[in-house]
Length: 309
Ligand SMILES: NC(=O)C1=CN([C@@H]2O[C@H](COP(=O)(O)OP(=O)(O)OC[C@H]3O[C@@H](n4cnc5c(N)ncnc54)[C@H](OP(=O)(O)O)[C@@H]3O)[C@@H](O)[C@H]2O)C=CC1
Ligand SMILES: O=C(CO)COP(=O)(O)O
Image 1 (cartoon, helix red, strand yellow):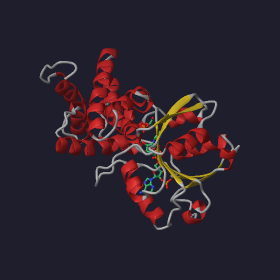
Image 2: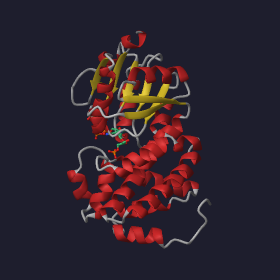
Image 3: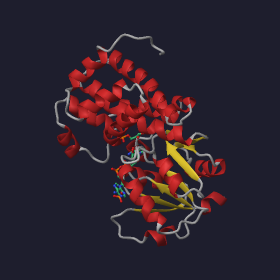
């Protein structure tokens, strides 16, 4: 099969990069993982590559782009971004940053309810590949789909990316909810109210409303807010147990993007005058300004309103 001849380079040797590499290897593709720590020559690795998958955390996106810019990337190479975060200086999403740096390359966003540890165990999962260049998304769909990994197409890369990014803030709130043992009613209320908050921000930043009801929006919200495997959920959960943020981070394996996303999102919300009550309480909690209990109290005591305002 033609797709099997494709060569893939995964940039980022964290758990998500390794997982995506494993998925491609299961389909007998030639896959190389490049990490800052291996000392390998990135230029040599990408010389004959067909696809670059960036699976670095948000703080790695700009350095990675700058490094690739020095290598004169061939414009036929498809770039896939799998990062879920907002760049702190520009407040832009990875899609914007990659698109600005490599406007001639096909660009695909990969995002969905994808807890890496479950995928590595071979448990069934689904994800979304979204692009304005449909041919590139279709190729990625073929390259990564398998018996236990189902890949859907979408033509809204921004909405797909923002769903995966914004739910990390809600996962922190959800961890608090479970850590404080607030019960099933509270959790249902939180997740249900989280979705319109995500949609308010996500549509303002250019995503399509429909996308947020799909796998990369509601799907990822449910996965991340309900699983102790989520690092963002763990941040909220451990804060609710009384640990300080530095104590939580000292114990955490890997990156919890929601911490940075909350801070960036608050700036965006202030600038664009967006109502983000859950994010606001998560932000105050992460800054150490309030306790988890006060965050809950503040959310409950807000002015009464109509459900669909
Ligand atoms: N884990 C998961 O289940 C999922 C994670 N994601 C997203 O994927 C991204 C990576 O997550 P994950 O692999 O879990 O995170 P990890 O903490 O395991 O790995 C961090 C990754 O970011 C890279 N990185 C960090 N700082 C820099 C830098 N300054 N320059 C270059 N690269 C850097 C690291 O590169 P290096 O290898 O060179 O150290 C490493 O690959 C995040 O945005 C996350 O939200 C998306 C879906 C699922
Ligand atoms: O994005 C994820 C699952 O879809 C991973 O969540 P965490 O980054 O919170 O572990």
